[in-house]
Length: 111
Image (cartoon, rainbow, N blue to C red; front, side, top):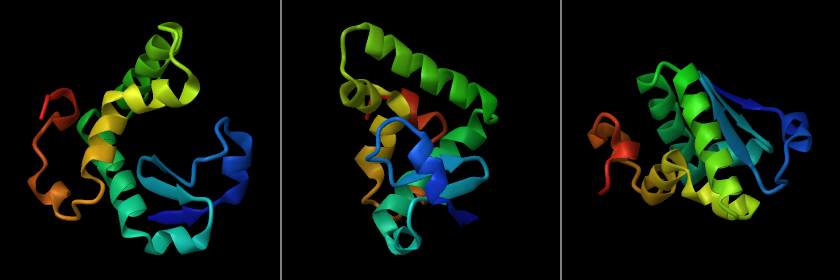
């Protein structure tokens, strides 16, 4: 289910975020983004990651990776892009059939 919730994005650091997956929802900044197949596929990949890790461990790993990369002298954007979950989502967000063929734990595999 997709929810349009612009206020959420005003509260977050990094104003460039336009969509976000929080199991089982996808939140978007603007209604038009619901029709952006690449953004929606990116967020659906995150939902698949969250589901396979039973949600809470996903968030723990996600934020642990982010903090680790930030502490290693990366700036905010560099740290965000180094997160394994983001690397998988960005790598395959244009492949609209990816979720049908995605392997278990794909974000931990080097493809």
